[in-house]
Image 1 (tube, rainbow, N blue to C red):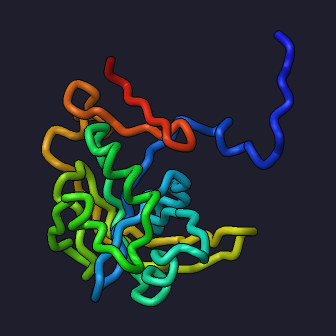
Image 2: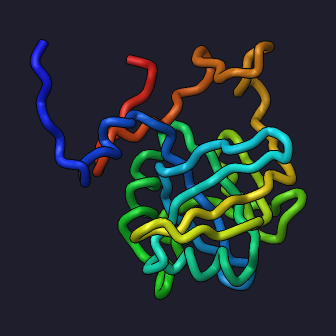
Image 3: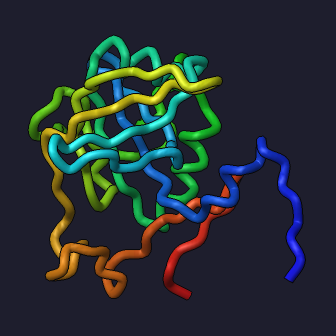
Length: 177
């Protein structure tokens, strides 16, 4: 098989599909941002990292309030994920516009999204400049999933959950036909 060269600025697409999540941030005026650039980085302490452009309104909110929630949406919320990734929350209430429901979180002051299937409540530990984005390292202070989301082995229960997987740009897939 021959190889096709890919421009280095297109490299993220070679790492997809990956989870697309909704990050809630902002205590006074809650906001939502769609993120696909997210990963676990440590179990002890429980750290995750996400990449956010400093141009984004959510970047400012996370830096100011030092907390955020990772909301794991099912495939059925793909339209809302696209919407929250395309629109800025500076002048728009994304909860109201996307018809997503705010719910109080258990450990942080930022709300979670009721329609999602798993939640990671995080406190911002550090910000690392990385080119045109900053890497936010968050300590997971509370993690929970809706009943039935995980199997006894602790992995996605694909008989119950349609995970939302981002292919790149505006394209998503799931594991079910």
